[in-house]
Amino acid sequence: MESLETQPDGLDPYSRLARYVQESPGRIHEPAADLAARFGLSEAFVRDVQESLAEDKGEESAFASIGDALRGFWQGARRFVRSVRKAVVKVWCVLTDKPLRFVLVSGLAFFVIHFASATYANGKQLEVSSTRLDGAIGVLFVTVVASHLACFARHGNVRTPLVASAALAPGLLALGLTLPLTSPDERQLHKVALSALALTTFYALASVSAAVVGGLIRMRRDASRQSRVSRQEQLDRLFSLERRFQEIVAKRSGANPALSWVTGMRRWAGYPLAAFLAGAGFGILRVLLVTSMEALLPPNSGLLMMLRMLLAALGFAVFGMVGYLAGGVRKSIAAMLVAFGGYVLSSAIPLGQFGPDSVLNFFRSGQALSFVAGLSALGLLAGLASRVEAQALRTHRLDQNDPVALYAEVLQLQWKLRPASLATSVMVVDVARSTMMKSEADPLKIEYSFRAYQDLVTKVAETHGGTVVSRAGDGAVVTFPEASMAILAAKAVQTAMQEFNAQVNLLDHRFRLRIGIHSGQTTAGLEEVPFNELIDIAAHVERVSPVGGIALTEAVAKAAPEEPTAALQDAVDGHNVRIVLNPVLEG
Image (cartoon, rainbow, N blue to C red):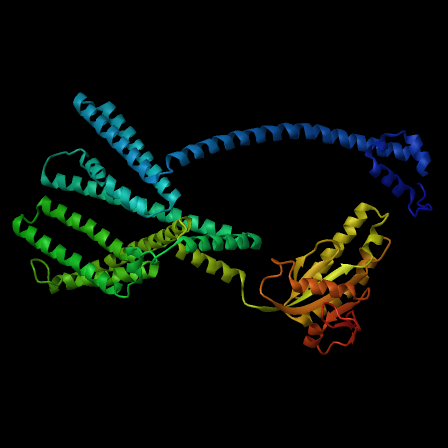
């Protein structure tokens, strides 16, 4: 075994060989005899090391070749899939960029294909092929509806599916009426009409629901994105909005633009009364129409049943609009329940089958409970729809440089960027003579020792309630809610350095620290504003601290009067500075 006797440079033969090879890895391939003679090692030892490295390199090369091939295949497949997906998304975005146009064109194309195929099948009197054709039409219908729902979800705008549903309603009703009839009697006609109405209602509900879900997802995504926006980006947006607002105000003349009727309804104090009257008005219309039709038609007439279904669809629309105009989920449900009260009260009008007895039976049979549950579900959807639409309108108004929207956004950003003033204590830690410690030392030992030092400072600071703001360079910046916590943490750090130098530090020189602490008021989180004045003053105080000591400003010393300190003659940045007499923990 070779001797570990150190040379004049302070390194043993193994360390000298390692440093020689680190400077230029190709040197390991020099003749073993030359390396052995140069560093005082046996030739057999050097040759074994060379062979071991060669074997490891050969195995690594073989595995690397296989790994590179698999990695190349996988990356190529991912690039192909990514390119295909990107192309599909691009085409989809182009097609659905104008959602109403996409929905109407695709819906019209489907209706044309459906009615053309139905006419062809009936003309040819097909049977088996007609069944297959119906299956294909069914798949096409599901595909078209799914594309519509995806389009509505993408844009997250509630008004678009409402307009689209109204525009496509005649086609959907006609589609339902083309269902095969086993016999042309009124009962069968009633079933067909019910199917047509159900299909139309389903499309409207599904479309609005898709838009609401898409809008909520977008709102959540935007909120998540906003939470990750840096303070600098928020400041940039604030000043950009202020410039836009000032430009718009300078160009504008005259009164502010009128509020939309939807906004006016939501702000109207008499809206609960309006909701009650809407429910009562619909109820009165229902009583009059049903009573009149019952007097003209037989009791089991299909036309009478169709009237009831149409009234049900109309009621669905009326209650949904009442909830939507209320704004917000809770307001929407409350407005619907108020409208329900007006609807029930109107049903007590003594005409035909209506009257007080019918209202009592309505509650006794449990129908009222089911009605309220359905209204609550509809109110939830309408409330979410109003919330999504309000966010979409707000975004649109910002894009259109609406002065009210711009000013509100400016105020919101100012409130966010200017929180309440908080008392904060800042501790700055730095290594004294760190340049000398690193000179001529092994770079790996430097990296290990300084990383371990920063980890130690972080651990001790966090244990004492601190928050590490920065670990740049050879120091650390830590904030504390109280001055006494900062002093205790500083003492704990200085105390921990004794054991650190003895057991962890691999450098020839010991870690010796200077610590400065300053307290004051701040209006922003220091982790977001690393150039805050508190940090600057604490850093300047740290520079006048003795090596291995702790320096405090007068503000810190007054907050911890029980801590023995001694005053320095010179002030720092206008602050008197004191030195902690016992910079380590006792015991």
